[in-house]
Image 1: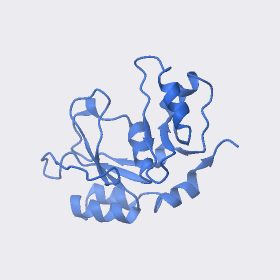
Image 2: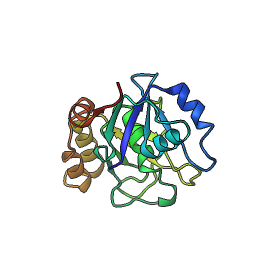
Image 3: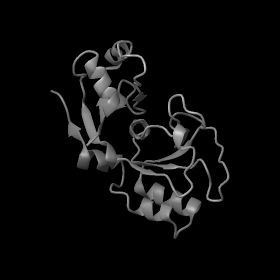
Image 4: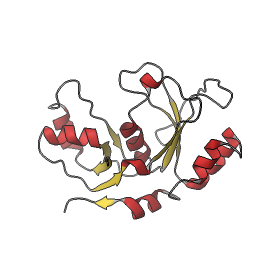
Length: 183
């Protein structure tokens, strides 16, 4: 099972990034609540470990605990970000889930300019990918339920997905599924 990791080793990550072989992607997302910490995925951790031994980790979570909703109209799959990157990005904002909102329920391309890194709507695509993707981050189950009902309808697949989220908020996610790492 793939995991997502929280590390405070920013300087070491930067040093090792330069040692990672060309063509391997290293993605790290700054934690919005602790500017000294970064969220990384399993592939990134493996690349960093191979470049200098195990990097220090403070916390890890099973990647599949961060729910992703793509919906029935998902498109431009070749430019879709890696799920590991998307999930780490969600954790960086202390989110619990994310929905693809590139197209609205009528099939029209959505546009949005996030106001800040804390904005729950953000752009993310595969490194080197073409079409951009718009995402809506959820910090609570209730926030997801309200948004998905308003955007997709109360009797929609999206509303059902939101209502079935396994955790109520970030604290619940960490309490139930996080594993403390290291000393």
